[in-house]
Image (cartoon, rainbow, N blue to C red; front, side, top):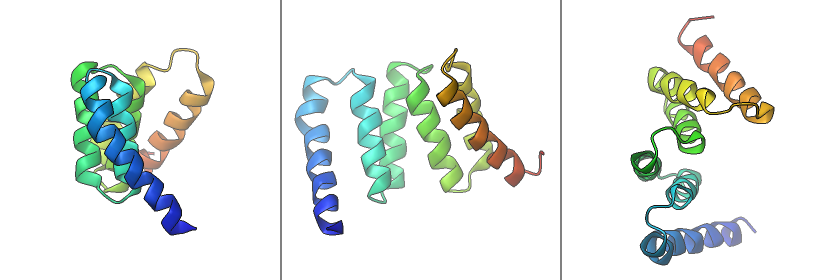
Length: 116
């Protein structure tokens, strides 16, 4: 079962990295989704590059900033994580579910930085 799920991720990676990137190259969602799959398959550097590509299209986009925050926290780069979470938080407007997620992650990062 686990291999089957991994196989689907590899299939999704190929699709996003190939046809979708060529067809929708300026769509933030393509790069953000590619980054999510890359992170889940253990490719943190590739995931970071995909999230950064999304931010080149729109530096104020919530999801790539949030996902970069998660990735940076995962790799223990807490200062960078804080920066990306704060950028994401500025984009949440009235979406409470997103605000809660960002605040929770910020609290964890602040704790790691000794800022609580």
